[in-house]
Image 1: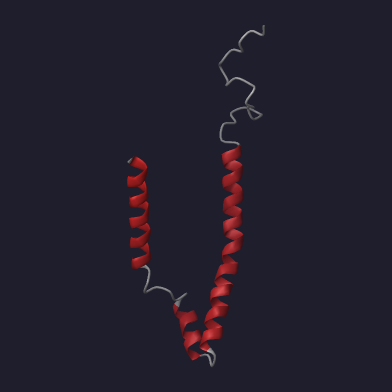
Image 2: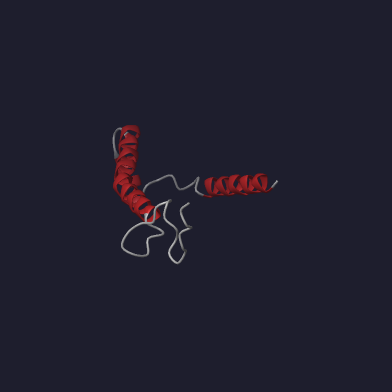
Length: 97
């Protein structure tokens, strides 16, 4: 029941955001003006859309890389990462039998 509630909340949030941003499909005022004044507006529009997507690749890659590094080393408190075999700091190892 709780997962259905969360799913419904997420879907309604996505729909609300999609409905709110529908009129803002233009890139910027200068880009819109250059597309409107070009002889082949459809090709210019597709080119600008592709350029915007290409310009998103480096920041997204950097963010994903940093997030991966932070997630990987989230529990490091000393000089090295704790492995699954080692107890957490402050805990004693059980005696080997």
